[in-house]
Image 1 (cartoon, helix red, strand yellow):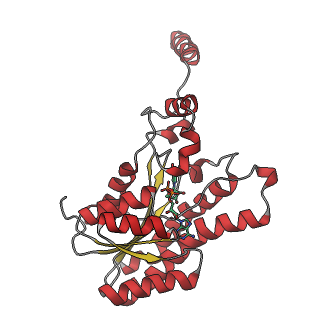
Image 2 (image 1 turned 90 degrees about the horizontal axis):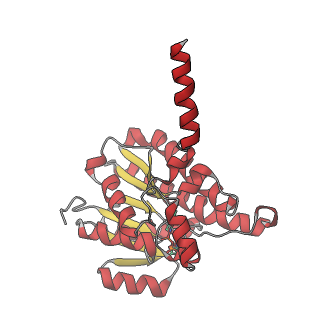
Length: 270
Ligand code: NAD
């Protein structure tokens, strides 16, 4: 603990489980006053008790619920310095089977939820005139798309875009807007992918660092982005993915490389 967030008041949505729980824990250890906000009451009460942090029921897809969350925190603590818009849902029917109800719910929670948390927190921060930090949870799938979870991937692409737009709109008020972009992390969201050892192993082998990420890996990045150490960083999505997105630039195969070296040598000899 080094008190990098000492005296800051932070909300962490989706803080009852997984990545949000880890972020809330590290924020508290760094000296922040933390309020976790979630729809999962039993988990939220348990985590709140374990971490010794405040809890507040909130459905991020509902404007009145987010407004009540922010108003309550400002009333109790006098201000809000950091909003971590992390709550999200995953999974998806196949592309051709997605219906309007599923699509709407995914966008409502994962994209509209982030927008509402960002906008409502920012309105308070602008009125207070002391700057602030908005930190969103995106995903590698928002950068690369995904055939199995297209609605989820689209929602996370929206989060990456909204993060950039927010940075441009709110910079003049001293509000920094960034995102973390997790790769495949060990939370209940990826339980299905890790249920069968062969599947887990084959996926882990596709990660340059050869493993699934831990929730703490995201929390470390979140502390950095929320702290003054990142005071000149805004509009950025920091992918914490063990190198997964390097797949966009696949390494040449040995065979391709041999052809390249031969052709290069022939060209130079001419
Ligand atoms: P998780 O399911 O363990 O936690 C998500 C939390 O969000 C839960 O506590 C849930 O109750 C809460 N939540 C869901 N809907 C909500 C709503 N409408 N209002 C308030 N809270 C709500 O999953 P996680 O892995 O910790 O995921 C956290 C974030 O990270 C999500 O945005 C997810 O999309 C993203 N992410 C996760 C991974 C991964 O591999 N686990 C990868 C990329 C991105």
